[in-house]
Image (cartoon, rainbow, N blue to C red; front, side, top):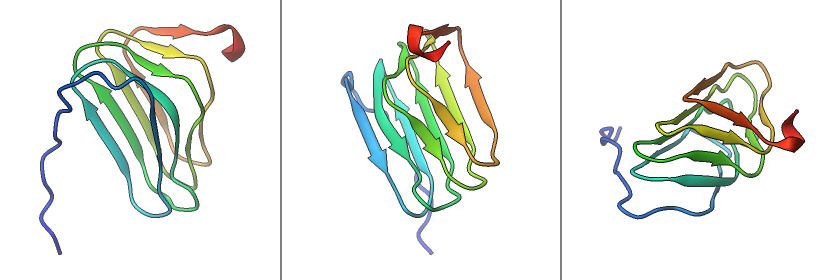
Length: 105
């Protein structure tokens, strides 16, 4: 079994982030602002965790954790929701001031 490594901070601003996995978790620890272009755990029970250390986290496309996977989004300067956040039976946790886009109401 490989040892777990600490998260690596990405030094530049990510404008669009898209990720998908069919097994395991998706963990993103961003130093600045990030816009999610779509994240999915596919058919697994994986968790999704996205954190911005400084800046806004924008959900531009759907974030989906299938099965019992949890979704945890943390935006130090806030979270802008412009699309769906879903999990089949897991929990959804949003930390930061949340702004809802017109399509999310």
